[in-house]
Image (tube, rainbow, N blue to C red):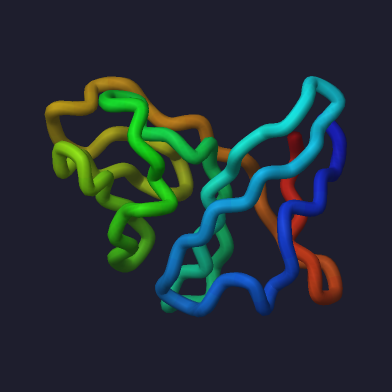
Length: 106
């Protein structure tokens, strides 16, 4: 794994989620970045494990995100699905801030 800058901290307001496409060694990759209201940062692949819908269009509540397509809710830290219809977790990445950048282990 290596460090990858996904966005600037000013790009995502507290309690919100935003999509970012970043060039990686394997080509462009779409991420959803969440800045929780409690000031924690989370990054995941920008797709629901159930319906392949963009999680960046979801609803953030506390430290979960709800996919707007079928209502599956995921834990932002573990990626675990908390309710059906999704039964598989989403891929999450260790996320931290460095200066004004949001950085993940990718």
